[in-house]
Length: 360
Image (cartoon, rainbow, N blue to C red; front, side):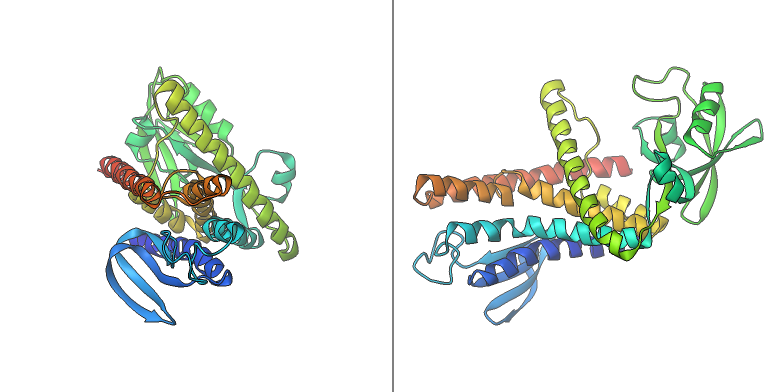
């Protein structure tokens, strides 16, 4: 229940911010907004104010802003989307992407002021970091770590063999211990939130290529905070860095799928993201802030992709119209967006089914 509530709050904020970008940009450009909807139809509830319907719809994973004339009608009406100039329309289309980036930057500003947990990879960071921990960053599928129940963000406190406990202060302590006990059953002492538990695990003698005997990736992390005035520019810088890393990550994912025929990493849908949101919230507010910022940047990057029904796809069609010097055929444009929307829904259903399979 806790995870579901946190996830609904987070997804509501992300959708609201994205659609608010379209809404306010349209209003600023003098366009009439006919509906501001949370979720996709059919409509569950709504009310009308100053000519705009504000609605809550049955399919919760998304949202929309319906602007007068965006389907090509009402070209002669001064308050319609199609009556406005190229730059006004492009600004409205991309405003949601910009708002998701701004949200991430604001969250990271707050996080830098409160203190964010980051990887400690050099002396400069180590000198400022506090509350150092060795944490799990990734758990490989079908690995001993996954079987034992290790989770992302778990803190590794110690390792046990034959009742003898070895404390863990750095990733090398884990690597040395695992190297000395391959093929043996040992125990991992982990801290998850406010609870400490001991998990039995049988280490592999011959792990698959690219994986260790335990099947985890880990890092030394610490909390680093900055004065409020420094956290402002650091939040923007971190948002840019996160955006670049996200773009590179998606590029490698697509490249590997095309060239090698498989995904480089697991892809999560709403259920997977909900579980990770719950885990982040249980570990602490700074983790949740970082995680929501990461999701917001992912939404910005995905929506900027020039795929039908996404903001990037709509922007591409508008640019094509600009170069043609004439509007695109309404039926063709509508068909392209409809096919793109159905493809996205099918992809979401497929990924959600995989999430359910992993969950059980």
